[in-house]
Amino acid sequence: MRPRHFLTLSDLTTEELRFLIRRGRELKRLRDHGTAHESLRGKVLGMVFEKSSTRTRVSFEAGMAQLGGSAVFLSPRDSQLGRGEPIEDTARVLSRMLDVVMIRTFGHDKLERFAEHSRVPVINGLSDSHHPCQLLADIQTYVEHRGEIGGRMVAWIGDGNNMCNSYIEAAGRYHFQLRVGSPEGFEPDHALIRDIGEGRVDICRDPMDAVRGADLVVTDVWASMGQEDEQSERERVFAPYRVTAAMMAEAAGDALFMHCLPAHRGEEVDADVIDGPHSVVWDEAENRLHAQKALLEFLLLGDTAAAAD
Image 1 (tube, rainbow, N blue to C red):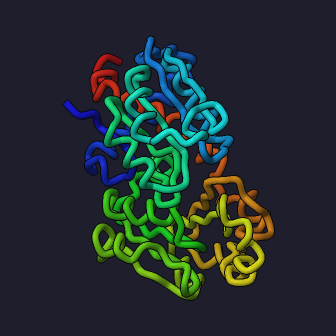
Image 2 (cartoon, rainbow, N blue to C red):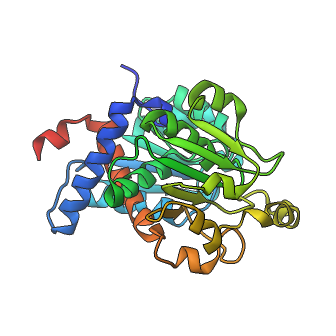
């Protein structure tokens, strides 16, 4: 039987995604109470990084340790991928030695090719097209603070990047409305809106229109890794899209603010927003750990671990 992969949110059903949020919260409570839960004892996660990260590496590595398993870190310098070995060959070899593989890379096609030739589940730790693990953490954070996100209004402010694409998928899966405030030429994937988010996603040129009445306001850096040469131009184009206190005042009174981090205060968000009363970014960052533990369990064990608790 072919393994289940998690390359985009669309790889799982709505009910499976909702299960992951419930399970992530259960695993968080177990850890908060000091209860050991080693459902993945003896399992090994391979972590392949072409893009560096703080939160992705620590959350996956710590998560596997807390579940009783272990993790192997591979940078381009540590594997033959960095020396030109075909992705297909690497997938065939690693999946005979590991139980699950997480890849953080640039081109989404690399993930798809790896998954096609892998015997074990493959997780997208981030690609230029999607960041589904971050969405699990974001949804879990919203549910913890405000309850179910279905029927709510979410505002995405800034670049129509990988995070924005995953929010579009999430709107379709978790049934919330999404307004995307992006400048012309920096919109998200229109095909994705048509195929997944149609009827749930609106593009707004004025960021104030996007945040008006929103229950959740989300942003990200203006220049992602690999776009450093575009930094100056992006600063000029995105200047009106900085999330400010005045912008948050247009949102719902109890609106939350999220950012996947790292953040640049004074660029995409003002300090009084990310460090202010609307912000839940530190809970959001922590929940990468818990949501991904739930994901690892699900891909390797299904829902049997939850039933055993």
